[in-house]
Length: 181
Image 1 (cartoon, helix red, strand yellow):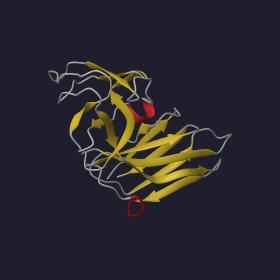
Image 2: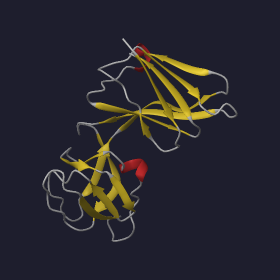
Image 3: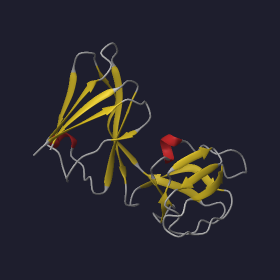
Image 4: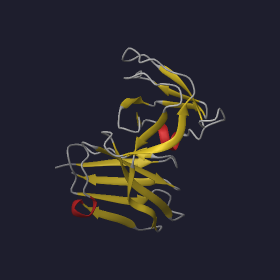
């Protein structure tokens, strides 16, 4: 048993770190004591068994690389135009084919036409491969945490397998998280 704390100061999606295999409870409070916080909390599949399309296609074939070798992949919308590649969908996410084939982890979205796989590509990508990421399952969506209050969630209400899913939060304000594990 232990307590860990995490301060979320960005409005971008942020991974919530959980030590061990589970938690007892989580407490979320607004880090900005002048405004309500609106949060999305969700888990993302990490094993390729439940993927969703991104609408982003490989624009030029990319060969599998040596592990640890950074590889840039040119992408488009399937018709040669700029893709919808964005940090929210790709940054630090596992990237798959439609059948769950794992290609690598996207470590940077250089632009709407370029993704970087810092650890390299596990498998080669053919031109016009439609890229997928793990499906998001929202535990809370657009939940309001009023100023001066906290949202407490117990394990029975918020249970998920953190060996196969990563937990993320996205908020319009800073958030303090206390995890009792």
